[in-house]
Amino acid sequence: MRKVLAIFGGFVLCMAMVGIAVAQYTIQTPGQPPTNLNPTPGGGYMIQTPGESPSFANPRPGGGYVIQTPGEVPSNVNPMPGGGYMVQTPGRSPTFVNPR
Image 1 (cartoon, rainbow, N blue to C red):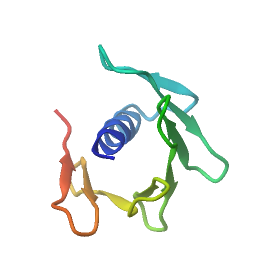
Image 2: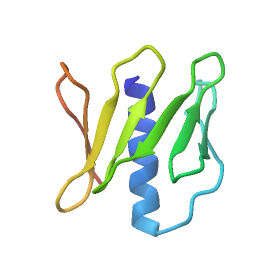
Image 3: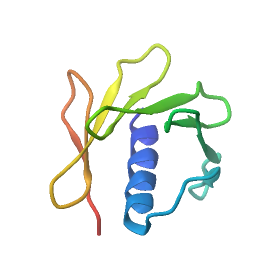
């Protein structure tokens, strides 16, 4: 799940910085299987890595996203003042995605 959050958070941050409409993308770290990011109706995204259940990032009213993976607790991705995102999963420490 943390891999999904990192990929999605980094991707959303990049898209926000350049202001590009999102199409289908493939994200691949050397030595890892590719992850596909596809837009869904309603402004969300499906995040899919071969051999894993897909995750869905759905927009929240007021900004941010809810990331849901079947069988796991949903995570909230919230924009932070000044840029970046905070990923919060109930029962875990928050993860921060900061621009460089």
